[in-house]
Length: 179
Image 1 (cartoon, rainbow, N blue to C red):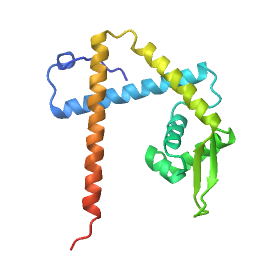
Image 2 (cartoon, helix red, strand yellow):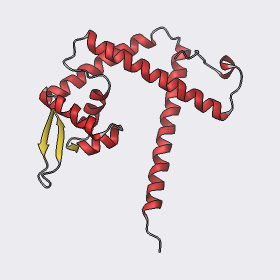
Image 3 (spheres, rainbow, N blue to C red):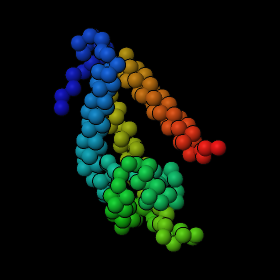
Image 4 (cartoon, one colour):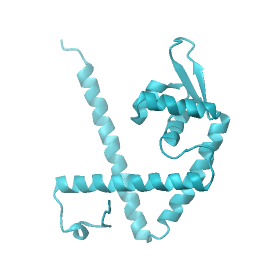
């Protein structure tokens, strides 16, 4: 899908209504996400990474590195991937020595996940490559365009934070029992 480059509302046919603006943001985000995915897959292949770190593998590694001992169910919930998909990916990463699976000491049905030293090495390697690729991607932009991108992403990040705050507040109000 080709998305026209638009830096202001005049570039997309005049001022947009709120609904059209939200749809436009959604379409642009989807396009950007696909572009990142393609770029990361190419980067992984170009640098001969030992497994397809781009995509779900990287997301899973990041979640596990930030939450050592997390379970497959928890990772599935955090990433939005199905439990079966997470389980298959974890088995693959464990077979490669990237992730270690440990039985829970209190509940033998649970498997706790940990990133190995080798896995942390791959995270560092991938992060450096991704930063380099991002620098190359953004290099042609003017300073003003780069500032606009940063400002837009900061606003989007704020929207996510507000949504998480609202979601958390709603959970607290809906879990309380009536008197």
